[in-house]
Amino acid sequence: MSSINNLQNVNLRELVNQNQNKITNREQTDKAAEGKDFGETISDFIQAVNNDQKSADQAVADVVQGKSDNLHQAMASMEEARLSFQLMVEVRNKLLESYQTIQRMQV
Image (tube, rainbow, N blue to C red; front, side, top):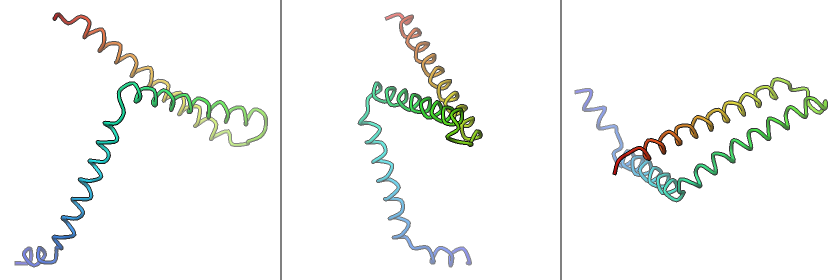
């Protein structure tokens, strides 16, 4: 009987509105993802890796020139740039491997 009383306290309209908002947000995210083609996505990814490299270089230059004493932040920035570059290389390797597999397929 107590579980029925708990259900009576639930506002169904509020739950429906929350679910509709989640669905709308998900649809907007899907539409935004559909707007980009594969080349643009890869280009954005490469640009992000490049930006990470540039910010790491700037952080190191600031430490070397004495403009910043934050060695920890410079090292973290370098590591982040290294990891993003490694990820980019691995994505490239997987793409090449997939392309080569498709080439080997008999039609």
